[in-house]
Length: 314
Image 1 (tube, rainbow, N blue to C red):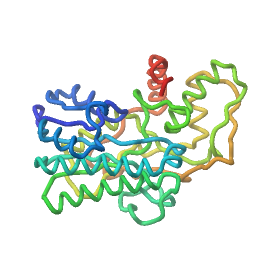
Image 2: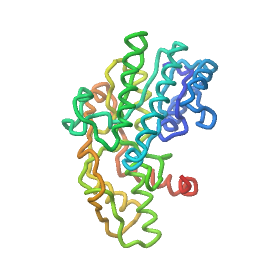
Image 3: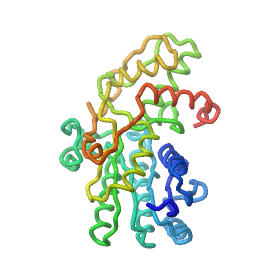
């Protein structure tokens, strides 16, 4: 990419999009384009085409999505499937209509089979049954990968897709029910500390293992891939290490200063037993994550403390 390329970041106000926007600015990219959801509903096909024809970006980064944790995915599966399919189809079709040659589609590690061999290689895609609590979201993201590959094949586009692991960081959604596990735990443990609660109950057994990537690392990886990767196969983005949900809760409790008991509600679903990405292909290109989990959690908690008034209403 040229530093003067016009780059449209779809979803630039979200956790991922805002981090990518910050990184692009820090790297000296000078012509960034974005539109908030109130300015442009990406589910509105006509509006998306009009926007794309008006702005005519050289590069598109599709970081827009309806996202949530296990509860939200399982409860609103129809919305997650429909909204995400509409968003990505509209963005990619409009980009193709104006001959955008370079596009990055960001998906999710939930695309892989529930019992995929660990760590999960990119070749595991479509080799087994999905995790039922988020299969609707996963199907939408798999369709996005297929659309990238189809555009490359049919139109000769240099489009790519990347599958990040679980993300966290400044700008995350801290809703107590609809957010992902790390920010949800952070908020609950912080509030438990303030309330003097003797215990906090965590969904599931606490044994599932997860990998967590600091969102600013994903932003660096996204720009790196746009500058260095051009292949139809999706590529994993992660840190290559995981920990149990119980260990995660204990780390967050130590960070926020909560000293009460952590209980497990085993009647709640665990989700996929383990989800660790094989990031050897990305490492082979010369990129590795930089942010230690403990440091990332501390930075995220500091951001949460500074923005409690905003996140409380979410």
